[in-house]
Image (cartoon, rainbow, N blue to C red):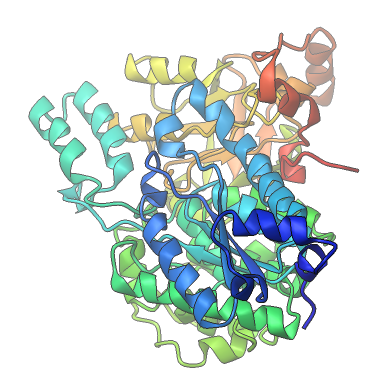
Length: 555
């Protein structure tokens, strides 16, 4: 067994390093064992990460039990929900690159022999997976788990987005203030990643599909004892990876990423998963583009329906068998022999999964829909692609056409919706919110929830070069590339221009000729950057477009 840490701990040349470890209480016994990093994104700001101090304790126990020495370090984690709808959201996606880079630097600077990654939420999970792909050392991901559903609201268990939906209902006079304020106390009954199939839970499920998490672990609710047991087991298992020389890219490769794409489509995962899978493919040096992801998604039936596509939430999905139950049904479409952190294959891991329950998970022969839960659109408004989530869109809205109402910021669109200025039949254009233009590619979750609360979810559409929360429903198209800030066609749209969204034909069309679009863009000028200093100014200069994963590229 090769230990990287031996290079920095051998005597007498590295006695200084040993002395530094001993200053913290490490013994010669500790330093004779592999050093396993515990990259912990615990904090008291983010509900999805609030329990990770306890989870980390059990991970450390498992590492120690199996003959390693755990060395824990902190990782930043920001909450999309808290940052939503204001300037804070500019910072969320760019944290992904910081997370990946910080873990890479800590592991390389200290020559760690392996790493256990602890996270739960939207950009933290993909950032950690990107770090694992960069490092290519033994690695395992442990989720903090979803929160339980809240009080009943609008016919289902409430979640954190119910509060925003309630605001739209309050403004429309559908509920009173007492009912609305009650949601503050009952929508989110405990810690964990939000209980719907948003980006947080989607990415935890995809980590399991990649083979980088123990089977069945992605969806164990945060407050349950199983969450601690699987954390301890993960600590033990990372030592098996170290002993056997199994590194992250043996899972994060073409086969693993394609399995993750298939799973995301089958469960109606967040549109953000496409953004993150593109970034992960880049870090793993896998040639996989948005076109291939779209093709795989459309060739994968949707066999699980979870909030926002239906009333059941992620704890309900877990009770129905979770990721293993879905992957067992999908096996004919998967790379069943792909390696996982268990040392066994995907097929081995899911052999004992329960059959479809019929209420949440259906058999492959009788899916909820034949097309995948995610789709890629193309057209003169999105020459380099746009992303949509058919699983969360009512079939009546799979084709929608209407006049544009243009807004150059998310805030302006949200004000118009709240003030009752939006009418049925309109296509709301929110632009200059892409990776460079935002900067940071903010998500338009607030707009979608306000439209729902106003009763306009099935009467309007939203198109944007920004992105969407995985909990969005209605009719929405995001990730439009090239973005408006790069002179993409979205910058040429004016109020009243007709836009057609056609999911069955994979099209997003602006009803103008190529000459008209070119004439308008000839007089276009790039807006002044919103941030001229600090990390966001740097990110705006370096970030790739959404169809390239919005990564900071080194090539």
